Structures are given as C-alpha cells and as structure tokens.
Amino acid sequence: MARLDLRPNCECCDRDLPGDSRDAFMCSFECTFCRDCAEGILAGHCPNCLGNLVERPIRPKGGPTGGLSRFPASQKRVLKVGGCLTTPDPSKADELPVPA
Image 1 (cartoon, rainbow, N blue to C red):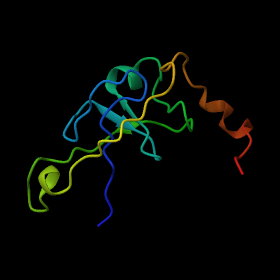
Image 2 (image 1 turned 90 degrees about the vertical axis):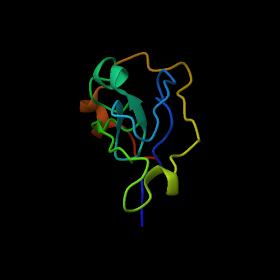
Image 3 (image 1 turned 120 degrees about the vertical axis):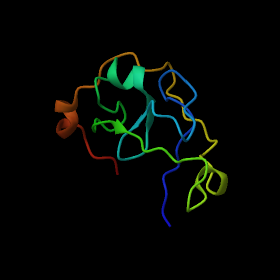
Image 4 (image 1 turned 90 degrees about the horizontal axis):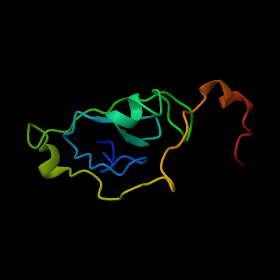
C-alpha cells in the first residue's frame, strides 16, 4: 500500500505538523507547509515547484488499517534555509529550465 510520508513540519517556519494535523498543506511532491504559511506568504503555491498547495489528508491514530499507530508519520524534518521570504510566482513555472 502506497502512502504519504506526512512530513512532520512546515518547510518555511518549522512549525510541528503531526500526521493528524488539519493545518498541513502539501504539493504533489509532498513539500509540506502550515496553514499560516500556505495561505499567507505562499499564497497557495509551493515555493519549490510552483504547484498549488492543497490540504494534506490526515492519518487517524487508529482505524481499520492501523492509522498512525501502524504507519507512523515521517520524522525527517525538511526546512528551507532562511525560510520563505517571497510569494512564489506560478506564472514563471514554464520559464524555468527543466533540471537534468
């Protein structure tokens, strides 16, 4: 069964975001941000890929599949050096070179 990492913190401000947090947002690459950063400085766009940010699904503590007790969230913290200082401009996404 494939599952999301559920990263434990906001990449911008390092706020804790447990796997059952309703304040976590993510992009299609699983970059993770808190609600304040996602709706504030990031204006709904990932600063890494310029894709849109959506509410990250929660993983309950239990349930039929075992939830967080069987499939814990990641403990690997990812943090942007210097935080997020500017609002991403998604209109520039097609102008950036594709990495090799």
